[in-house]
Length: 546
Ligand code: ADP
Image 1: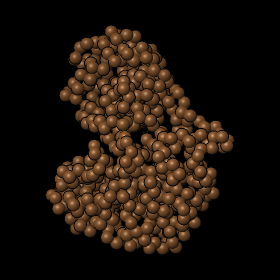
Image 2: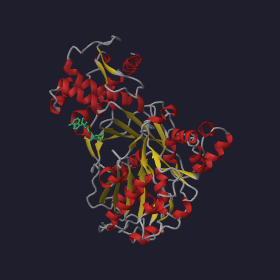
Image 3: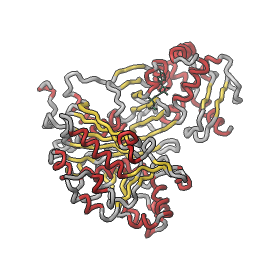
Image 4: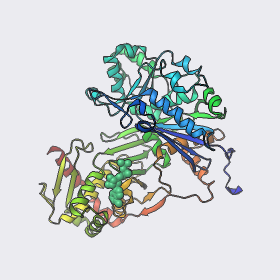
């Protein structure tokens, strides 16, 4: 590290940051150094590494459609992961933080006592599993048995209260997986607070004020005023500052694995919340993940709820500071329609698909765009727009769908244009930029390998497309570790923002790799796409009524 670039953070240069990712199928870990370079990656896969739990893809399927995961499997996975980490040179992380999947954990009244008296000679699993949990399984977000109450975490609580009132009664505290892990790592007998950004996923938090649970929603889930007070007690406090320590690492970790007793534990957060942090987005920037499903994550300073998007408070807000938000759009029809068009019109080859995209080209003028063919490819019933299903082709200014385009090779361009016009339609109202257009797009996921796709994305959304210098399959755990780093940096500079801390850290890298510009918009065509927006939106509505 050149001395002149030494940031004024007074860090120990050997400090390490551990981020964990407890997902449905695996527990993964990443260790970063003070320049946020990855120095170690570890993982435990539930089906293969812990076969005695008998899970398939990390879950148990119940006869009634319940999808659950054994909480003790997660604890045992943590035991095994720590064994694996501490067998390596980098095994002694200083700080830690996490992302975690969307699920809840129900603690019993004895949990605090068990957590504050863990025996370092025995693994966590054998000590916690018998008594610390009121419910030995955690309902998974895939659980279709809760569909009546709408499949969310608040619905899981409602279902438990209705169907197993005894278990609900015996539940002392309810954690999200994030605060469950925070609690385990601190192991000081206190069930740790929920973290605001992840708590937003519960649909009980009043996101607009960011101050409290919504009383109407609480009453609805808890069955009246008295129940609402009880539920608030079970949910416990909410931490609104993403960059403070929840506590020190528990004695159990120090004694069993020789971890530093100075190690601080930052509040764990949700999975998408941590992923967005790994990009260190500025307001107005987008992450576009083009995979099996397409997901858009954006950072915004406006609270602009939209029925198609999920909005969360930003995971690195500071308590008392100006609040910002992250929004997420999830499309079911991502790769599936792109592959369908490739197979049907491009001999099953991406290079041929690309040639067709280039052959169709950008719209040359607004007049041309106003009559440009538009296709919709909802092979699976879509969520955005809700309920759209089927394939639709429209030519010229006719509102009636036709069987096929006059030039069927146009389908390659059309599938991309309709996906990206939909992104534009939805993100415009949510972005903080004055134009309603993104300032920068980060493209990730399998289809971001395709240049034709990236070029079209840049031009339709009128923004340069970048790819991260190091694309990591572990972006969730990396984001978690970066949040831990931010907490660490704020010890000496309490006002430091997450983004500024990341910038300073990265300057320590001798050959810091910045994100690479991979596609620039062709602005004249962007103007032509403007002329398509209204017709696109009208035709899209029509596909939902078919
Ligand atoms: P997942 O969402 O399941 O993690 P990935 O992000 O790995 O998936 O993306 C996988 C998808 O990437 C595949 O379904 C495939 O359609 C798509 N893909 C891979 N290579 C290309 C390419 N060259 N052009 C377009 N799409 C591609």
